[in-house]
Length: 170
Image: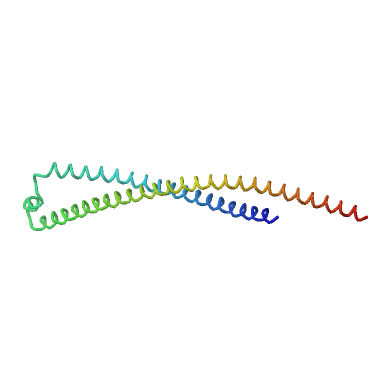
């Protein structure tokens, strides 16, 4: 009877562990899905930004024979120099923001890839652990059935012995 209680306790613990592992598997799956979506969006944006940077670099190369200083000197008036300076500064700031965004996207993509690999690894481990625990659960259920059969058999024997003893005392 004690063994039956021990087996039932072990069965409950194993069932709780399987439930916990299933929750972990679901969480990892959601994490993989979210990270994959973020990764795809970041890769798409990076492709667009790289195309934009490539066009900008082609433009710089094509117009490269005129340096910034020469563009300023080609102005006809001081007001035009100020306007050109302001334009050159805005273009330079926009180029810097574009380059910075590309760097941030590349960093984000590296982090997302690492997180995705970790999540996939964790998912595989949780699935393996779940399979092991389900097998353990099945073994424990068989042990419980065996222990229950044994307890019933012992009880039956004890009842027969009690009936035989009662019959002798009559």
